[in-house]
Image 1 (tube, rainbow, N blue to C red):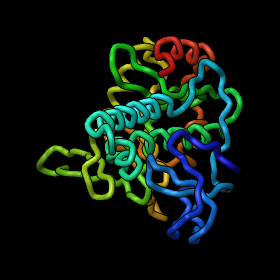
Image 2: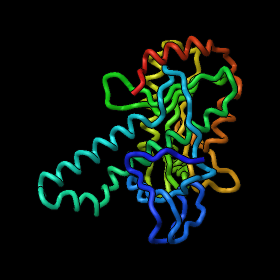
Image 3: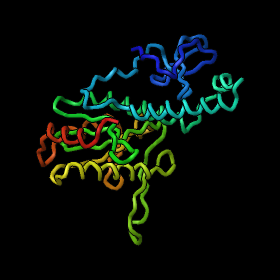
Length: 272
């Protein structure tokens, strides 16, 4: 499938060999490919792993919208600062330099949300979706809310390519047991805290303790082990897309009104 070129994409013949970001196919020197400046990677012009366009109900929102908007804002402000500081050479400096990692991370985050939204289209009819929802009164957002037979799932999508999420446990005998999330050997527990904060917002908006509200961190393209892998940290599920979809369709002890709950949450958390 051919992805539409984004504002930060450039179609070109490669001067150096590389590999497609999406399918990892080797791309030789001289190959016609797309260079993505936001992530400093290349991809096939027609890639079999390119996500299909996701057609959503208007109230469902569009995955990755706020992250891409923040990326464009930071990119635009940086270019403006460079052009102001260097009136004659600003354009050349912008063309030859890359955005800082703190800016590129927003583009990478948007892509992760878009890829997970595509996977969520595999859910059966009757499951309702909300993407990229704004939390009123804050600058925060919720990547995905899924309302289905197992309850309301609040999902944070993370694209940590090649890095392994792991559960780290301290104490348990003499000292109190504490659980921490580590990603590629580094502390990632702030992600767990972020999902807990989102869960509190969604639970308060529902105002019904009978509706199960479950939190999840879904890692895309991570280095999951062949045996085992998924775990929970302080009650938050840490897993990959295929397993997430399975969990989303498991029945809950308490039947919920999916359509009414979807409408209620769509009003409480507007599209970002």
